[in-house]
Image 1 (tube, rainbow, N blue to C red):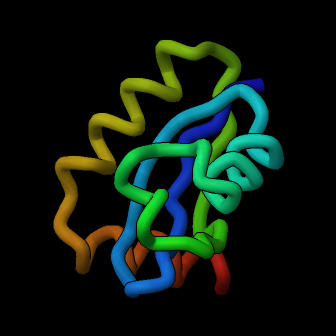
Image 2: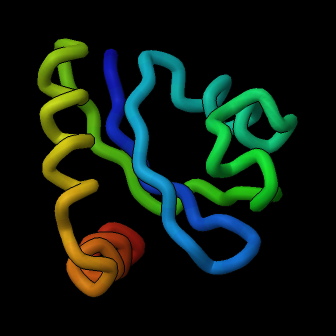
Length: 82
């Protein structure tokens, strides 16, 4: 399984990425081995994710989400938590 995810960083910002191991990726972000962006914004918390059968689908969705406004992302997260 492949995942597109959004984490909330300690400064309130959002980071979007994709992975094939969601739990391991969140641990990597929180240990400073994730992305450069999240390294100085730890800890991060998983706020949203979607599952895909292929890496390409997950990467395409990551691109789409990264081009959304913060408000659009926050609506997605709220509906996900809902």
